[in-house]
Image (cartoon, rainbow, N blue to C red):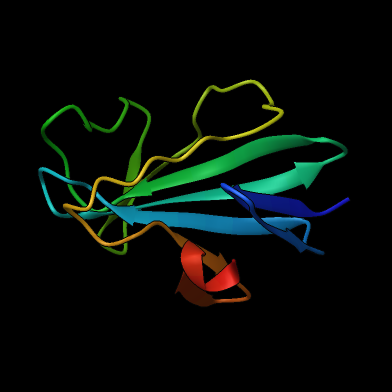
Length: 108
């Protein structure tokens, strides 16, 4: 099935089964990463990584600090879609495939 990106009239279909979504927190200015996989028509989150804490982004009690990031598995049911908003205050969301990260706009 793959991943479908939609921004207004722009649509990109990517033949992938897993990806990392990354962004910079607008207040704390630290990196946040989430590993996702496509499972049928749903999106499943496998792990989140957080470079710091504060301003509503405290890692859960079971998070493990490794390599400078807090690692944990979010308790989130599979989702049919994930809607992302852009603020203009921080860089665009990044989509990371096979270890290479690009702004989502580059795929559209």
